[in-house]
Length: 331
Image 1 (cartoon, helix red, strand yellow):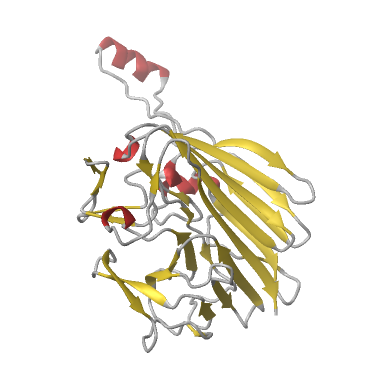
Image 2 (tube, rainbow, N blue to C red; image 1 turned 30 degrees about the vertical axis):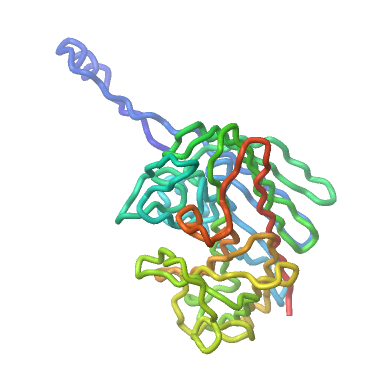
């Protein structure tokens, strides 16, 4: 919360007599929280960024554990720089050259270090969303929406976006949907950092990925356009193995989407997480400065600039959809 600039009464009078302008800082709207739960999971969501603030599940000792990295105080999120729990868009991931071509027109985008990341300077994770519906029934859910105007951050089309967080027993289902009045590109994901125990690293987590290929990337993590096999490389998690300090910021190509896309397990807490998605890729990311692992289910990063990648184009009359499910169990 930003405080108003205030002056004692006599100082205000002096300023008025001197005709000196008084600048009053704009106060942010208060952040709203919504809590839903089942006997297995408690979810706390913010209207700011459609952020997952907390996700509580029980470990093997029956103790409630927050399995996402986040702040205790909602007021800290506007200053966050790493997209904690946020809905990322209009295009998740990187876009090379900070531009893309669509229907023979070039659209320049906000860029840092020659690339566009996670929707721009103020992507969807920095916007106030509207809480459309809250249902606390047997399968509780909260639905939020955001209206992205034509050329916001450089993207064409007025885009209506919704994200629905739904609890299904011991699973969190996240459904992103979008419609547009003009041809545009869309790629949405949730950016939660999962932390399955209280350790200061995730090296001991056992990871398995139903991902036989990865996208080759440059040093700045922008795809080159080539798709490579993981076999015989350190990125091969087709069979479960410990992360063991391998830094991951890796776009994986999903195999059979009907199967579990990813599974991660902490022996310390006994908590395992399984990921299902209808998307063609998952970016697996382990941040360097705090313990956590992201499973960013989405289209291929930089898809607008590679004709051999799945299309990210959304046209009027079509519905974009990304449905992913995160299931927690105790082993």
